[in-house]
Image 1: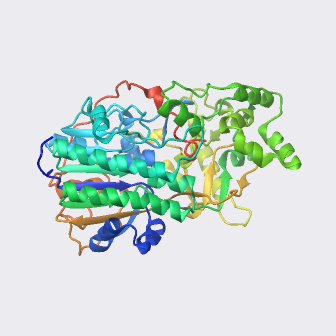
Image 2 (image 1 turned 135 degrees about the vertical axis):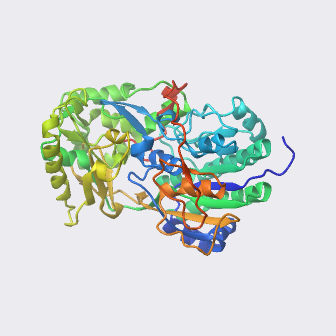
Length: 539
C-alpha cells in the first residue's frame, strides 16, 4: 500500500436503475444522508437513457460517450446468424473512459462496471462487474485474489441460484464488497479517476417490485459505502449517474405472437429456442459450466418431446387451469422446461421476429445477411415499411397504442455497427408495456402481481471542485457523461463521442484516439451465461 491519501480527483458513481420515483421517497425518509446531500447541495436532474435502456448496452454508452451503433453492444447477446453469445468487453468497440485516461497517463480504479471482462491493461485496477464470470479476468493479473485477501469474500453475483431470489441481506453484502474493494484499490494505486458501480439497486427492483422497504434497505447500504468512500478517498469531484430508471408496467406484449398472427413468423414445436437468463446465470456465470442453448435436463427433454407431438405448454396450461393447478406448477417447473414444450420461433423460416426483448425491436430475416434469409434485399424496404405500419397500428385491449414510436434503426443508431441492430425499433408507449419474445398463444397478459421494468428517466448529480453548481445540467443524456468526466480531469474528449460536456463543467477540446484492439479470445466465455432470466433480460 502507498500509505498516503489517494489523490482521487473525480469519482464517478454508478447506481443502476436509480430514478426520481425510486429516490424521492428514500430521500424523504432521511435514511440516505450522504447520497441525498449530493443531490441537494450539488446540481442534479434527469439523465435521459438511450434505446435500448438496458444495462449491457447503456453502461458502455456511458463510459464510451457513444451510441450502440459505434460501440457495438445492443444487449446482453451478440448474434451471428441465428446463433448467440453473451457480450463481453471485446464487443465494446470504442475506447472506455479509463483507456482514454490511460492514453494521457492518468490512472484509474474501476470496480463492478458492466461489460468490462476481460479487463484491458491500464495504469490502475479493474474488477469487472455484470456479465463477467465469477472468476473474472481483472487488471492487473492477480489483483482479484489480492482484493479477496483484503475484503474477504468477493462475488459478482448474489447467492441464490436455480431461480431463487437472493435476500436483501445478500444484496447489502454485495454492496459492502464493492465499497471495500474500491477503497482498498484506491489506497493501493492512488488513481486520479475512480468508477464505483452498484448493480443490485436494479436487481432488487426486478425481484421485489414495489417493495419500498427492501429497496430502501439496499440504498441504505449504498449510502454507507459512499460515506466511507468519501471520507477515505476525499474525491474533489463526484458525479452520480444511472443507466435508466424503473417503474411499474401495465401489461406484457408478446411481440412474436403478434407477428405470427400477421403471418411474419413460422413456429416449430419442441425446438431449442432462445436461452433463459436463469440457465445462463446459474449454469455459466456462477458455476462456470460451458452451457449452451442445447443443454437440457430430463424434464426439458420430456417437455420437448411432448411439444413435438402437439402437447405444448400452452395446452398443458389450459388443462391445469381447469383443475386449479396452474399456479403451483408454474412455481415448481423451470422456465426452460416450459420453454422446451412451448412453440418456438422458427427463425430460418420466418420473415421477421424479435430475437431478444431488450433490443426493443424486430429483426428481418434477410437473404445474404442471415444464413437462411427469406426477405430479398430488393424487397427489404417495402417489407420493413409494411411491417412498421402494422406495428404502429398495434392496440392494447383498452384501445391505447402499444408503441409511442416505431421507426427504422437509422433514426436511433449510427456508426459502423448499426447493421447489428434490429431493423425496426419499437418503443413501448411510456414504457408501460413489457415486451416479451415468448410464443404462448396470446398477445397480451396482465402481470400476476407487482411488476417493474426499465424506463428512460435516469438521474445525474454532480458536486465538488470541478462543478459549477449554479449552472443547469440542461437536457443531460447518457452520451454526455464521458465527455463531462473527462472535462473535470482536463482531458480532451474523443472526436467520435456523440455526447457533449454538460454546462456544469468547462468543456475541453476534442481529439482523435486510437481504435480499440481487434477482438481477442476470451477465457471463460462459456461461463458467462445464466444470470439473466430471473430478471427477465433473456427469456
